[in-house]
Length: 435
Image (tube, rainbow, N blue to C red; front, side, top):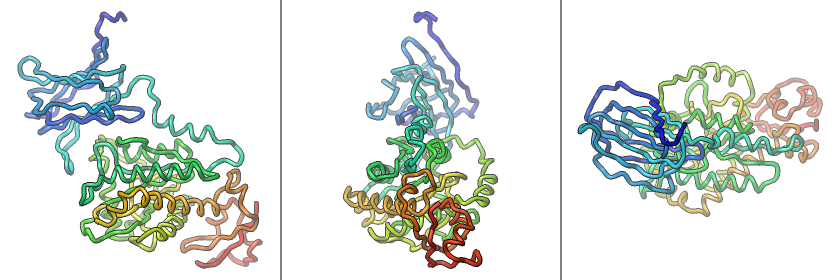
């Protein structure tokens, strides 16, 4: 089509109840595969959306609205958006024009008020040719050799973008602290033999909870680690803790409240919640029929043990709760609370690069210890495992799950330990035969 023609593509139109929904603010967050534009509103709105070419623009018309502030564009977070303009159309409707650096596909939806946010209109812009997040994380698995491969650790820094997470007494944002820890952990993992890291989010933008564990699956991760630093109503509560998914309920009231808070992140982060989690029932059934949850618990315990060497732990045992982000049925997953940012001492520690490096080192130590014991054949850890490796039985272990972790048969495990039955007790030391 000639560049002298204007292409106007009507993407969507809504018939929400009309209101005086003035635009109070415009916020923009750029990720590797899309740019998100959020219009903060003071009420529900009717709006229409279309794109124009030559030059590339996104146009949003909002019935009966006004812009109450002057939009400011931060180039660091602007992504594909180059400029934001606005004016009054036909004397009564607000027109917002986003000048774009490239042609982009747009998606939009409205959000109801939640937490610190009121009504919002969310615009997601996907530039043509941009690499998808799924493609990015798949590249890690593609580059690994078939033999003596690295174990892949997917690192998820919680929150991000317009969802700051918990905020400490001194104003520290959880999203910034956990991203710093995640980057340090990724650096240490990539420097260690036998492991490779993949970051679920690589910058200050929000990733929906379900998409986080899906990216770990796309990367063929051997372990998914979600990093947080939450708040609690009692500022005296402090210390690190480690969580795994629970099928039946939370292991404590604090765990239940924490899961409830974390599961609400999609509402703050800006995710359309119209889709129901129809797969949850079958996913939990699958989890009950395989060793993924047992493997997750073992990894969580070794990480918790190492964190206890760095500083105070909130709980001495691994906790359980129904976290959405841990619901992958085939990637063992743990959630780590590196501290309570609501506690002044924890907030101060988490603000220290030296302390964050120690936290990352402790998490790495726990992961390494777990992989030494459990990495399957074909991995660097298995190839460098000493013959006759030992395993200390933990509460909840069965001979069958231990055999599965080490890719040996039950008969081999019984023979190596001269067992007449499958009964084992916590604290017992088992010899793991070389396969």
